[in-house]
Length: 297
Image 1 (cartoon, one colour):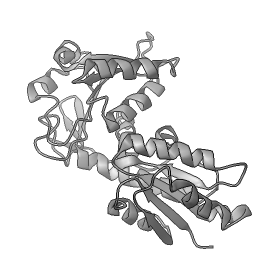
Image 2 (cartoon, rainbow, N blue to C red):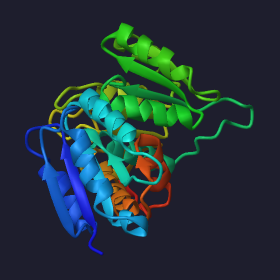
Image 3 (cartoon, rainbow, N blue to C red):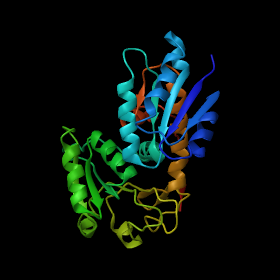
């Protein structure tokens, strides 16, 4: 039974990156559809549901992507409602790579630090720059779900406050706290983890601020477009030691992201009832071998 992946994308042209990764991960047949909408999603999903039966349903999977994150989430909801009983196929959601990138950043950090509270019960503190963007939101919620106190930095404090209020209702052990960029200097020397998830070519943290982050064990910049999101981190940095800090650039995290992305594609062909969003993807990522050789400056 050939493994068929239905690549659905809300953009006019399905992403070639996602297509190549799917083939490299073992998909035998790739069926691509762009401009996926509320009007056409049901018929596309029905085609995946009703053409195979029983255990053969596991050989069909759906990948959902696209740059418009809110639209992807809307389509995902429609897909979920289209399934019934065991008439379903596994689904992997990764809009603009935001889920796999966020999971990769969290996994990279966990290679070098513990997320558990200290012996005195003090929680790990993380600073997520650009925390209300597509990747930043997912990084923030994944960290909070691990019990971390997350400072969500945004240029819009109102947006950060709204996001944190909504997410804090879901977590009993982690906490999200909104913070403006003007207040970052007040906490920079007390956070244990820094992840910059701002837009391409936008500096989020200066080199001077990075030097002041004396409590940070790991610093990650997810921006691959010059100038760097965190000045002092290079895009190719992969577990580079700089004094007491471990540094990752976007391409360094990208290597981990690729492993996670491929693992998720392989996973959806194991059974017909998987729903892989950010949290489920992190669970898959925990089992992926992402061993990294550390380099010194």
